[in-house]
Image (cartoon, rainbow, N blue to C red):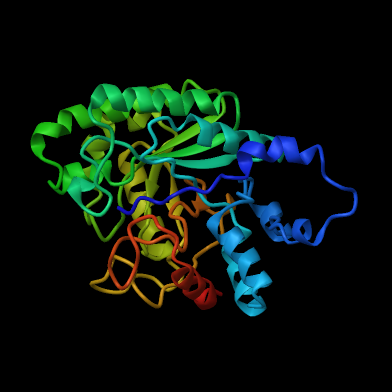
Length: 329
């Protein structure tokens, strides 16, 4: 699982600069990306004004690449999850985002991604040094959310890697306990929803195999589970899979990552596959009671890893972002 970066440079100073805003905006201020009216009607989620896509859009406008900048607005103007992964203290990133989201009356989206032995040593290897370090990290994450509205997707791949055997067996029990502890801690925040990741339909093809590991990992105390994170499976296939798994979990709700699934998967290529497209825009209007939201959890335009000419996992890749935008409908 690629580890996305986050871009919140402007957020820590947003409160200071807001008070000094001119009644007549400058050209630079006028170029700041704002959420589109359509997104405001269908999505309650916060849009990061300083995302890589927003800054790239502004750069291309200054360079005269107006058509490319216009295409990239398809990413920059949508709410995308923040991944404060790899930070010893996620608090500053989380608190800055929730403060900005609260001022906008919106819900901040996050991914908590720091489980020990993360990603089986693959593209996004790393994570907390041990269980105690992980619980301390989650504690800082949760405390920084405070009373704000937040939705947290918890530990992409962590349960699926238990099921497929990629994570060694001696770590399974501890991982399930850590995930349960993380859910319990995050749910102490009064307006935080938590969705435990459950892979995607092309990975663990039989949903029943996930049921007991998810239960041992505390899904009953969560708001639900998440599917298709950083993957490309089409909406209909993921929804069917989610409803099957939901039924086996007593009707548990779920969310789906649609950030890059507009053209579905490319057979045999999961890492930076060419020809992909943005999928369903983030919304809570899903037409299915058990499906709480379509979300952009993976940050479109951030690399899956050093494959297909891409940079390291989580690094911004403007050419790939532009291709996703150009191919989208």
